[in-house]
Structures are given as structure tokens and as C-alpha cells.
Amino acid sequence: MQPQGRPWARPSADVLENARERFSRLLGIEGVQAEGPLFAEFHDPFEGPDPVGHQPSLVVQPASVEEVQAVLRLATELGVHLWTSSMGRNFGYGGSAPVVDGGVVLNLRRMNRVLEIDVAQGYALIEPGVSFAQLYATLREQNAPLMMSVPDLGWGSIIGNALEHGYGYNVMGDHASAICGMEAVLADGTLLRTGQGGLPGSPLWACHRRGYGPSLDSLFMQSNFGVVTKAGLWLMPRPEIFVTGTITCRGEDDIVPLVDTIRGLLREGVLQGVPMIVGTPDEAEADEAGLGRFTLANLKQVLRPGRWSVRLGLYGDARMVAARRAILESAVAALSGAELELRTYPGDVGPETVEPRDLIPAGIPNQVLLERLKGVFGETLGHMDFSPVVPLTGEAAQRVDRLVRETMARYGLIAPVGFLLNQRSMVSACMVMFDASDAARVQLAREAVREMYDRIAEWGCAPYRSHICLADHVAGKFSFNGHALGQTYSRIKDALDPAGILSPGNHGIWPGFRASEAG
Image (cartoon, rainbow, N blue to C red; front, side):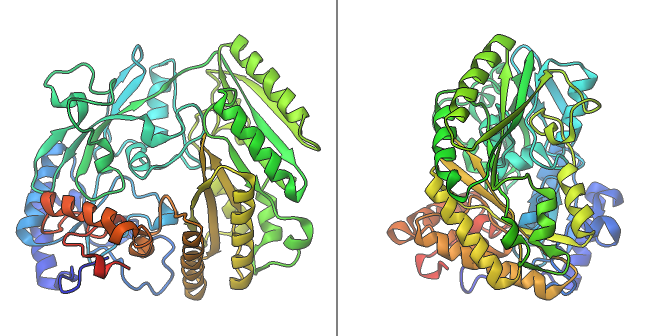
């Protein structure tokens, strides 16, 4: 929590005007935004018509590592705090809006070069402004026999998504784990490279995860310890074929044997990547819940039929895929009432021929989900994401599903309930949806999500990521041994950035943390 007595106040008008002039001299007028449509992109897109707090004062957009270093040094000189974003498309968590009101957004969209694609070693070296769509286009232009992993919306930064522990769905779907080797600028302008990158001229920077001594890559994920300016990204070989489709179950309690089955198939290596389970409300519930356009009945229009459905994928040599498919079909046949639907594509399939519902498992960035949601709920659609990490059991899935359904009913909101399955845990992906033009609905959504954070903390669980307005609230849940974890984060922060210039409050990390001040 922000230390008492050391507030990061919104800069005064004089300070901001001086900062705007100095940053403009450094980056050029095109590198500084303080008004207009582009500047508006760096607010919380779903903050409502009467926002309070978390407002950016300026946006600075360096185009090189050297400019990032210069921006950090100048911010320290001016005494203004920065808030780092790559593309700023993480809308369900606040976009590019800063935790501390009046922050200068350090946005890295202009650093958008694909620096290298190594087909033999299966990696790309990229800057933080490279989006999923841009890398996909580059791979196609070069006819590189590699397949990338993409999230549900492909407009964001690859590095930004990975630094936030984001997910895609195919073999490299754990995006944080696909990063190998980083370049980062510290708050004082120091430039470092992690792992093998610390060895000048190393050919292994993006190939081998560790160097000599502690591995620092995770230090720059979900933190405010530095600005990542380059990273290696592992890509999977383009498969000969891939098979994708769904398992559908129609009974309320079918989720328990379903999760048991998927867990076994994942650990055995039959299923690859990150399968996703989505819960669809039943007819009786959908007929009763919601307000205006935001009803469960409308939500059912964009969800799969059945009570539970699993999206999955199989990738590789045709003979290997056939063997995996046979095991999968046998396992699903043993699930009472389960239905399996599969489709097969060549590994080099393009967006022209793949079905829209299969774009994501094909590794093709798209906006289909957003387009479908806006088609039903309108352009003022807003959402705040509730993403707890829970045990990989059907009982845990039911518990989350009940919590979300009961909470949404009390608040008059709606939220689809989904689960991204790892081998030993799962992340629930729930979009609490509302009309972003209605300030009261925005506030209700924030209150509902905060309440659900409190409830899952009673289970010993927490979200893997949170909206900026609840960062301190979530960080305060990690209270073992007098908040030893938070204190350790702040000791690192004190060493690397004692003035707290860089993204103060990001994931609840502040300089000068004291356990008595934790929320």
C-alpha cells in the first residue's frame, strides 16, 4: 500500500508544463501527447463519464532504448512519476491508466521493430511495441515455418502481455514462459540484459533461460523495477496439421469429471497448450438475470451451447496428432453425455480459410470476440476482469462459478465464467460486463469484483492480475509472516528506484513498504 506521509501527488500545472516542454525537446512534438484523441487512448477506457483518480497527465513515447534511458533520467530530474505501458490494450485491467493520479504515461508503441526471426532456433527478438498482429504479419511475409500463440484479442503487445503473465492457447500459450532473455532499463537509466545476454555477443540470449547466477527475468514481470525494451520470444514449429474443436457437456455437475479428464490428458501430453472451459448459463437463469442490453439471455448469444464447453487443440506431425486424437476420443467417450466436435487444418492455414471460431487455436490474431460482444451489447460495452487462480479440480470450478453467479445476481451484473487450464492449476477468466457510459454501473462492477477478491482470499486464493484501482487491495492479501513478500518487493524497489519514479503502486509495490500500512 502507498506509504503514509510519502504521497505521490498529482504534479502541479507549472510542473506539468515544464515537463511537457522538456519531454518535447527530448522526443520531438510527436513523442508527447497531452490532449486529443490519441491522449484519450491512455485513460481507463471503461472508467465512466465522471472518472475519479488514475488519470494520466502526459503521454511520452520514446522510439529507442536511448530515448527510454533519457526519459527516465529526465523524469527523475523533474520529480514526475512515470507509468509504463507497451500498447495499453489491457482494457479489463485499466488500460494504460496509472495507479497514481497524474502519472506521466511512458508508452512504448513507437518501439515496434521485429529485430530478428531465427527459424532454426525457433525464436523472435522483438521490441515492446510489436503487437500479436504485427508479428503474425511478419511471419507470413517471410513464410517462416513457425506458429505463434495469441490471446483472445490480438491487438496488444506481445511483451506487455507476457510481462503481465498473460495467456494464449496453443503449445506456447503460457506467454510468460515463452519469454527468454530481456533487455531492461532501470530507473536511473542503467541498461542491462538478463541471462546469457549479460555475455557480450552471446548467441544464446534468446535460447537458454538462465545465465550465471540468479535469473532476473521474472523480476521485471508484474513489477515496477525496470522498463523492458527487448525480449526473446519462443515460437513453436509450424505443425504439419492441427486439430481443434470442443467437448460439450450439458449437465450442471458434468464439470467435475470433465476437469478430471482434461487434467489427465494434459499431464500425459495428449492435449497441448492451454485448454479453455467456458460455462454457459442455463435457460431458466438466462431468462431472469440482467439489466437493459446486459442480460444473460443476450450473453448466451456469444457463448457455446451446452452448460460447459472445452476448446482444445492437438498439434504436430499427422501421425502424432492421429495418436493423440484416438486417446482423446476414447477419453471423451467415457464421459457420460459428453459430445466431441473436431476440425482439422494444415499447419500453414491462413485467416482466409480458417473458421472464425478457430482463429485463436490457429495462432491467428483477431478481434472476433470483441466484434461479437459489441454486436450484442453495443459500443458502450465495458468490462472488468475477475481472474482468480484456483486448484485444477471440478469442485473448484463449481465454487468459482457459484460465486460469480451469486455476486452478479446481487449486483444486477453479468459475467461469463471461463477457466484456462494449466497442468496443476487453472485461471478463471471472468469478464464482469456493464454499460461503460453509466457511472453507477462502472462503480458497481468495481465493488462486485472487490467483494469477490475478498471471498476467494478466504479460500487461500487470489487473482493472477487485477485492475489498477484494486492493486493495493490484492497485494494486501499476500500477508504471510507479516507481509514478508511485500516487504521484500519494496526492499528491491528501494534499492533500484528509491524515489519511486517508475510506475509507483504497480501490483501494490511501493518504496518504503511497511507491514503496518498494508491494506
